[in-house]
Image 1 (cartoon, rainbow, N blue to C red):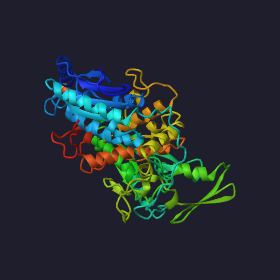
Image 2: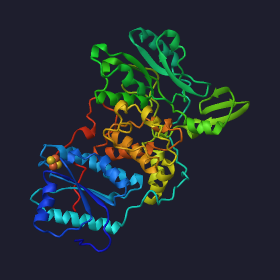
Image 3: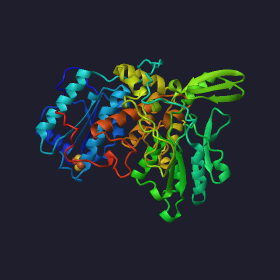
Image 4: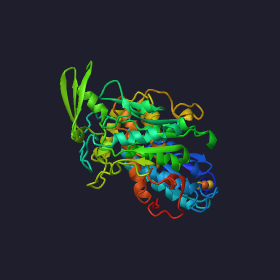
Length: 489
Ligand code: FES
């Protein structure tokens, strides 16, 4: 019998079989009066709950989601709830960036003997959801199609990197190329205003290496496949990479996760002064038949296309990640040339994230509806991601388990992006390849940036890809978490 006034709402509850499900049973046997809005899903342990289950429920129309497991130290499988606590807290703090009120999701602990506590938890949570009312539906939201101007203030002077000691770098690569299977860098693309990856296997190849603001790809994307991480160590390939500071973080993260071995990688580095946001450059250039020339100076480039000059200052046209970059030169390179540029400011909120921070929850919800509507589900974001290492088994492609459908709806598109973001929680080095590769310019990096911010706040300023010896925070736990406080229900 409902104990709350008004229409029932849809609340999904994931309960651990060993404690909370027993607690709910105890409350039922004791005939404790409870609201009837809950639909309970029994799981073997709170550690079995993938945050994506919760997102799926919320996106599919649940008005609230409750998770309850055994009390800390009481998990039937020892530590399932400790791992779950970290994941669930990250999810809770991630929800607002999607425009979902985080009060619609809660997690708690109830033991099998705590029938009275279960009654209190379920009554209080249901009352909270009734107070919030039915959750906004994507179908009803008005798409917000205007993107606000982003505040772009770099931490250091950006430039075009034309004074970088490229010849020294080339000589160093030539000296080692015989010992390496391949060295990956950048070469001129179809014209002088674009680059493509360069796979160097001979000294002649090395001469084609270029350096500058058009070197946008992250060469670490190729590492996992090229090395052959599934092979025994002796059979693995030894490869070299020319990296910017941000690229090197992806390599460190792969080392951290033991997906590659340090013996198989040689890093060559030059100081990066910033890279162009090629989507904006191409938009500005419009349709053209031929790039006649590209002239560099310290502040930017002048591109002449079909006889018409276009001026691009790097301070105005850099990728969002470059404005907040505090590591322009790889720290852990085997061969490094040039000096670390002076960092004059302290890292601030990245521009994409700051834009979303300035919106209300409703505006963010509408914003993502408008942006994700354009998503083609081409998976370019996933394929360009250096940390997406399970491409053959990606749950976006598999039917077993069938996490996501092929339905052409904004909901499924957002869900796909949430899958990608959650799978990168505590792993994403914010290299921005996902956003750069997106052919329709959706600012999906903001989702990763929000998770990175949450991870940093919860786990002592943890930054992904900085320390090859560090354990990623969602792969470990502490019995007493300093920054995760139990919320009372
Ligand atoms: Fe209940 Fe792990 S068995 S939380």
